[in-house]
View 1 (cartoon, one colour):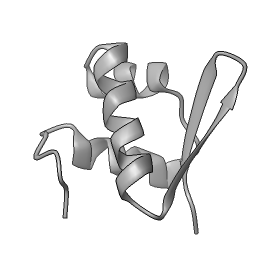
View 2 (cartoon, rainbow, N blue to C red):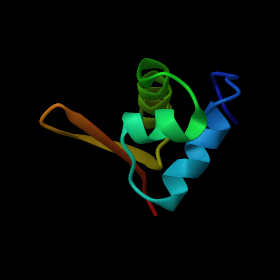
View 3 (tube, rainbow, N blue to C red):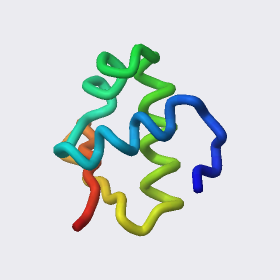
View 4 (tube, rainbow, N blue to C red):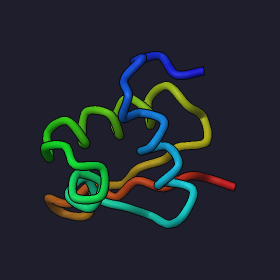
Amino acid sequence: MFLLGSKFEERIYELLSLEPVTPSEVAKRVGVTYKTAQRALMLLALTKKDVAYKNSGRIHIFWKKE
């Protein structure tokens, strides 16, 4: 179940299952702006228990837990 109802959220969630990603990588693959990708990733990280993130300096890294 996806809370946003965004057409990008499901595609972004699938990208997380492949490998850890940054918002800029997601933005390029999905075809959205950096800000849109980061908001969707952060929403997934806050609402789904199997999505985690970490800040490495200014870079946010998101991944799907096993």
